[in-house]
Picture 1 (cartoon, rainbow over the protein chains, first blue to last red):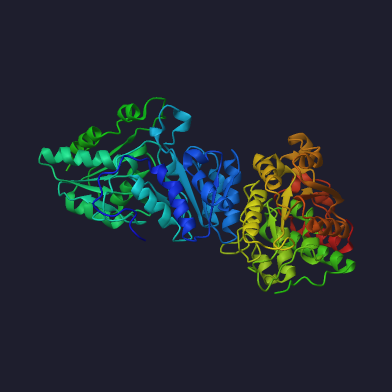
Picture 2 (cartoon, chains in turn purple, green):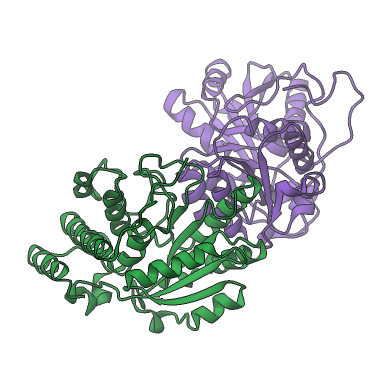
Length: 324
Length: 286
């Protein structure tokens, strides 16, 4: 794959990870990839409408019918297509888990589920619109790849990387505009099952995904001010998990903090904890949603309310260090 | 490549095929002491017509033939009728039938895609088959398959129509103009908990389907020639998706099952019941 942007451009404006989807689809179709994309009446929000505009024969909307969309995706994949199906994370998997389970995962179909509006950062729409449990559902399905990109550049990489194999994927995207972390090629590209080592450090390791990566980097900066060397891993690939990197981090730094925009049950922290428990138990702390539903509010205020901040990561790091 | 069903079976052969399928159904559910004989016996003529009546174009020697017609069991618990038919059609060795529902077998309790080859879709969670067919039909349309190739036959149960996803699929099939799809309703009037009219009424089911823009035919689902003719006629249509509503009896061919269909949704017969069932099937008492 080629670099999406040449190195050493000025800092780009913030962008939502969901904004990567439409342009990535168009790139795939332009490249002659045999893709078909499906939407369920949310195509302006997912960005699927961009493919509708450029390659109308490659895009279908099924209306507000997520169950139908998933089984249609499976049927299309059975004819040899690479299928992308997009909706909001509360509706997909929320509204169609059984269809994903039986028709996508059990049949091992070449379907890439693109779930926009993940987490509580959806904001004002409130609890029913805020997916805090989607990663738990998706990681529990045998054979499902689960990815949470940290910025729009990584989202573009992941969405297009998914087309290179014929496996089922779940890629969780978000609504708010976030700073771009992946500014140049000096930072390693996304690949499935591989952690990205963003910052070296020997005192503990901070592991984050999605919109928690950027505040986690700021937390590492703050800890550095206090003389604490925090390693930072961007774990966009939650399943398969880069167990080797997690074990090495535990062995070399002796304490772990996980940060994610998801219930602390069933997401990144759970996956890392399982690896640590089996291979190298060290003190571990979690930053995440403490088993409660979301609510309406501006997304930044919600992140504060639910403790998804750089300050929370710093505090968790100190708790973990105290237990070493 | 040509199709393998160039010579449809004559009437006496079709009747004989139905007997053989019914025999397999009661034998495999007896051996497993579980499984779903009632809704398999009701769908026997449907499967015989599809695979032996010259309706579905398929090739047991090449199950992945890209231009094949696809037969999808949406009521995914009725595996006995599927395995019995595929074995009789030559997809796999008849000896495998006795492994039904045992550890390590391909013949799982509910359908699993490609196990054995010829099974097109995993199911068992009801209501997904018509949507899956919509996806296949869209794929065939994108690939520019000729109108009379790549037809999709979806066998659905009447209890299954309680599931809302069916109606999403029915709506979208006509919206997309997917004439390749033929739904076959096994209208046996019983579901897991009892008579469909008491559990959740679906009538007037034909009118509902018609209101969604489908072509509708009603047929005696145990008249194998009538079923075959209706399916051939549906297959030839290229204006709208079609449904053939097959009026059937759950447990057909085995008196004690047909007389108590609610009791024979999901269990296997005893030794004595098997003997009686085989006798009745042989005599064609249905």
